[in-house]
Length: 363
Image (cartoon, rainbow, N blue to C red; front, side):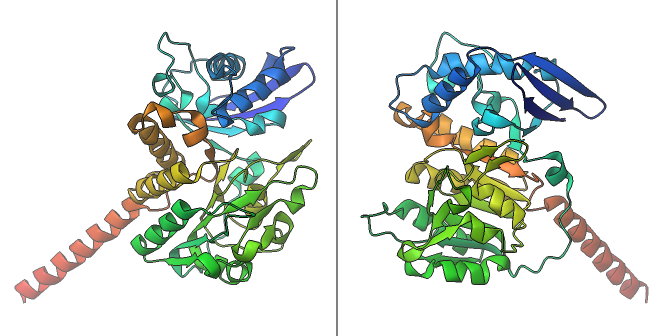
């Protein structure tokens, strides 16, 4: 029920390699003259709630260009999409594309692709298929870092800090809050956690991607370059900061972003942001995401559920995509909590107890 779509953007055409369980096809799509303008307008319309640009028309246009031909039958039994984007497509949350334009165009009732399919991303097929070495040396399930800012140079993120504190308590993990959330503490202890949650400011440097940074306590920066020299053991890194999934696009390599640096530091899966995300809604969605993960859902399905629940429960003031759709998952989407494995061990334990009691009774 999974399809992988790998896009290659050329001068006049877009090629898509579509792989499903039993088939693989290469498609050539015409690249319209207004390609760049439509993508730029779409990005603005979803990341800026105050814009007057039409989100609906651009979202439907991009769907028509990118989805029907590769999938052939978008309404088939395919429930999950893994997308390897190229060029400007790296900046698109495909889940916001619309397969039609309904008469009722309120944000809550639009036919988002996310309503029908879970969607995740990868930098390349090589990274997607690369298996992480089985050496779990993490000591804690969860570790969160949430600095306190003075409100002058950087706005304080109280909601994010409260969320990290709550999740650390829930998962019996560690929370490094306010002045404890230092760069030194991160580099010292980040490899001890299976789920690594960073709730802080992120600053994008388009001209020098290696200088893009996360801001720890005392306004101390951790640059992308620092991460390339770090080894992390986390199964999942939640980069709850602005623009962690964006950066300069290099031909043949993709986006030079903070999230990419975490991938090369050893994190097989990430949650990253494609624009400046609001503190309040981000904290709510991250809490719901972790709750869905705990139920045993895959990472893409957990985020999908958290985002759609937020959209369906909030008033119209908070339904614009800028509030809830900024985060996308990347990499390995396997479940963090394998309940099937837990059930197997429980059954084996019960069988052992029954056999033991049975032998005692026979004697």
